[in-house]
Structure formats: C-alpha cells, structure tokens
Image (tube, rainbow, N blue to C red):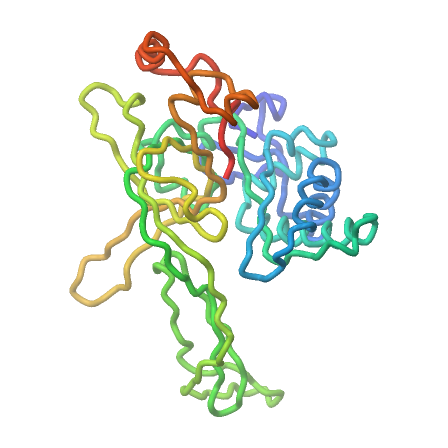
Length: 352
C-alpha cells in the first residue's frame, strides 16, 4: 500500500507494478478479470452494506434521473476477508477509473439478489443510477495530501484525499456525457462521449468507420443527431483553497476546482471546510492556432465530507446533532486558539 520496502521482504517483488512515483503495488491487479473483481465487490457489499442496499431498494423514486450512493470506507475494504480485501482495496487505489464502474454494477447486482430474497421484495424496485463513494483512504502521503499545494501533475488520474475551504460554488448545470449520431449514408449509429480533459467537448468522427459486413468502411461524412439519445447529468463546479490554519506564515493559499456530479451537487457552500476524495485530472480549453494552451488541474470528486469548527470542538452525539452545539465564550476562545483538533475530524463528519 505504500513505498516501504519492508512489505516485499526488503526488496522489490518480481511482479511488482509501479503505479505512480514513490508508490508501489505488491499485487499485479491487472491480471484479474473484471468479472472476478465484480464478484468480490458484491460479496463485500453483502457482508458490510446490505442495510444500505435495502434502504435504496425501498425508495420510491426509481427513475434514472434520481441518483443514490453508498459510502465505501477503503479502510474497511482493506481489512475485509484477509488477502481478498487487500487485493480489492489495492485495485480500487491503483485503478479507480476501471474499478468504480464495476462497483456500480456490483451494487445493481446486489440489489437484484437482495430484492429476490427479501420478505418485502414486492415493495422494492432496483435503482439503476447508483454510485460507490470511496472515503477514508489509507494513511500514506501518496494518497492523503496535506493541502492543495501538495498536488502535483504526476498525481493525475490517481486517487487522492485533500482538505480545503470552499470559496466559490458555481451554478447547477446540465452536462451531456454522451449522445448518438446516425450516418446519413449507411444508418449506422455512433456514440460520441464527452471528454473531461477537453472540458466535456464532443467531437464528431471525421468519417463513418462502419463496414456493414462488406469489409470496407462506409466513409460517410454526414451525421444526424438521434433524438432522445442524450445522456445528461447534473453538474457543478466548486472552487476550494487551502485552509488558513494549515498555512505557513507568509504563504499565499492556493486553490483548485472540484467537479461535482449527480448526488454530490450542492454538497457544500462557501465557507465550509471539507475533505474531498477524488481523482486528479488534467483539462484544457479547445486548442486554436496562435493561442497559448490553457491547461489546469481539477479534482473529479467521488466523496465529500463537510465539517466545521463547532463539530471539531466537541464530539458528536445524537443530542448534539439534533439540538445544535452550544458553547460558552471560554470554550469558543479555547477552540479557536487551537490550530488542530485534539481528535480526528473524521470521527465526526457529515457524509454527503
């Protein structure tokens, strides 16, 4: 899970894969089939999150526009079922873009199996739009970043966890992730997907590549949009910057953009201290001749924790969550004077 050579007996294992700088993987996660990973994910969900699956099944809204999610602690995954949990957790850490779609399919499969065996199955319905929200990444510097300044370009496409303060929230937008175009010549339908790196721009193919069984490409250059083929999602951009109490004297806080989708929209507001888990991505505006490329780093968020000073200063109890936290002026002063809470912020976080 980390770069410590003690994990491999003082040396590098022959099948060891390097996933990123200074972070090594003792498992060759690429050799396992997707179907095997999906089966392991379903077994983990049955063991640790069956009640959340039941709650989702009992929800009344089963339209594809209504999104549901299950918060998956990566610590719990790594501790589950010995070596199998370590293997599955390593796969999630090193290949999130491949693993998360499999986890979503596993949630749908577990929904079907739980509904078939549950005594209230006739009141349930399978929800197609479900997401696995990873949080509580392992304690290593490659995954848990101290602040925005710790992010580097070689962390791109990797899973990270970073704290920050929300300074600006964008408007809610509709994002088209894909749509279909039909070739006017051979009627073959091409699916065009939005590229995050190009700020979700969609580009038509230069020509139709369908062969139609003849062995030769069609070569058509005219395409028509297929009505009703658009796949749309809720979308919001949020700007966060480094937390003031973590800055060194004379330092200027740096900021980065968060990309929120589906059930994560409106998860936070300006002034909130948050901890976000996501993948670091590069993106740029459409290139044009004579203009300098405009590239930046952004975090494609998977999970957001929102917390504040009042929550940090006192342990959370059911009564404090219902009735609010009341502090005397002396308590408030001592809490503000302390730069770090005496206990871990993750012990009391509002999970979104």
